Image (tube, rainbow, N blue to C red; front, side, top):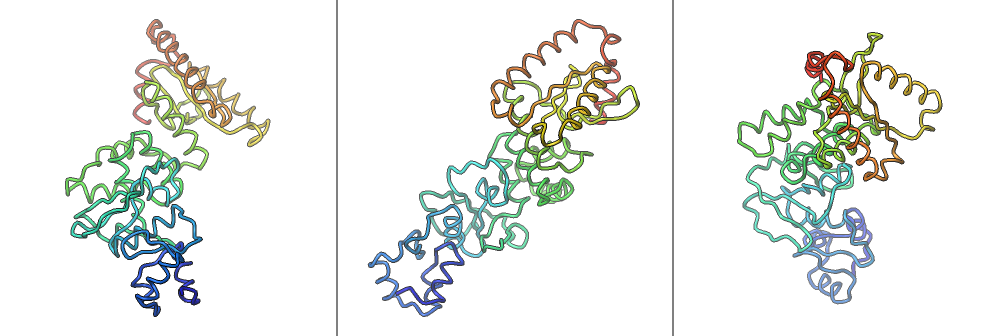
Length: 334
């Protein structure tokens, strides 16, 4: 009933789903369509949309259902959109999709429908090579800004930057364009742009471990650390500390296990830590294995932070690695 090559090709190109009208364009009559449903060769998954029996009910297949259900101006957004773009740790309580305000449809039970009067298909939607239509990276991030925690949003932005799908410069232009429209979520985006100002594009390992560690310590109640903090050593060389609290002169350096860099890398790291200590700084290093046990790492960081905070309150400026004035001067470059 639905075994013609062109019909099977249509299902195969759309993750096993198709609309009646697509099938009708290929010569499938209403009678044949109803007979296929009755014979359980396909199942109805949304009004006018069926999935071929035997095709997995996957995340991508459901996204395709929503694309077809929402029409040509719809796209996947929110956490689901972030997942399609390759952003990490995107929870999926339901799959969100956006449609134009006037579109009169209902969402399936497993999906969330967002109606928007602010849709420009040319700018806001991106069609992937597999045919799925997803919110553009910046539109997706802007949606996430109103949905998730600060830590989740920063991780998403860092991932998008690392993947080269949305840079801070592009984000700044986007925010400037929508700021005049009074859109919510601008403040969180601007805070991230301020944080990354002057910072180089992160590598995959930096974006992952740094962001996760920064989120972990703020969840423990510590102030947010400064990313890539510049510290001038006694030699005159400037190093950039991955995560730093200048007020207590404490730095965190996440990294991978020693065999990613070998003994030579370990030796260089130790020499740098000693040079930082001469400036009054303590550096704590955590590799990806240690960060698999975040509770242990968090307890250690909190204890050291509190200890150094108490120590700094008791010591005059001239006994610390450098004075409060120098700390403030460093902050201007952070």
